[in-house]
Length: 376
Ligand SMILES: *Cc1c(COP(=O)(O)O)cnc(C)c1O
Image 1 (cartoon, rainbow, N blue to C red):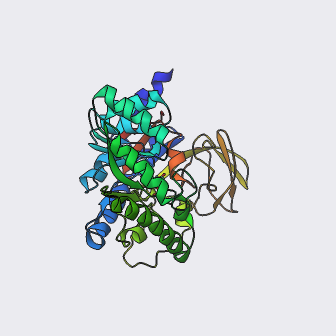
Image 2 (cartoon, helix red, strand yellow):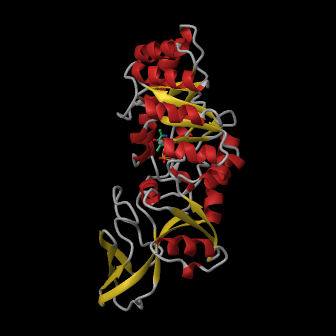
Image 3 (tube, rainbow, N blue to C red):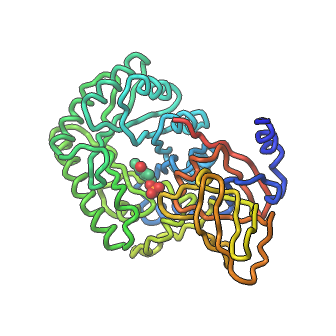
């Protein structure tokens, strides 16, 4: 029985969207490509010296990463080794794992990836550096290591420039490791709603990154890369003269939560289009004012609020359980059992992680089915 689903997906390319079994994750290829092109073009014009290394945690999909690289990205960021393995397997030549590795098994997996791609990773403690050095030595590879600095996001990262220097020095001494620079991502700044708030947060990030880089360089250690930024703030880091690389992820798909950010005060920042939707079927119309569809908590994430029904005026989201959503239906709606709806997810990354595949479509027709690398 399980193979029916795989068989269904094999036969989909060239078929109308109406034949896709639901719930299903869809990407509008024209919008996806427009988002990729818009960011690449903005950076080419406004920040030509700054590299783009999009975050692949958003899509977990080598096909999309290849499109980003074809548009000029230097490689990708990954959060998990499962993503990094899928990207390397899909031909992405330069991978930065923007995360800390805390066990020998994962360090060995990372070193294995470094035998087919250029690999770098973050550290904020000498224990991680020791694990990475052992793994690199036993595999005979070199791993780039960036010191992660907490620039205000309050997640991983050393808390001072002095600690950043200590760790950078220990990386330069470790065989098999190459000190690559600083990871300086301010996650919390991305969803601050006004440009002024985002600008103030990133000013703090720039100051913290600059202080650490300056101390490292004054001690005679080169600090070639300072990397960070996301979809909410990239134009601010790009204008900083500190950051050399940007890690935007969500821009490829956009989501409802990013749609709540007030526009950037910097001119020319693209308005990214909603390219990702969850396709669902109305399975019940128990009352005139209520519809039930077959996409619930297992088809979209609710951590940043409910999906939007902006594509379907007259309907509103009321609630979700595992495999159902209940929708409010305006008077006079013709909505029927069997009708299909496209929901805009509240938060794209955790929504993608609920699906085994992305159905790519153009003009109402499925063009391809792309695997999602869900494993860790
Ligand atoms: C999620 C993430 C990004 C990308 O952020 P978006 O808001 O999706 O653009 C970049 N860098 C790191 C380290 C992240 O965790």
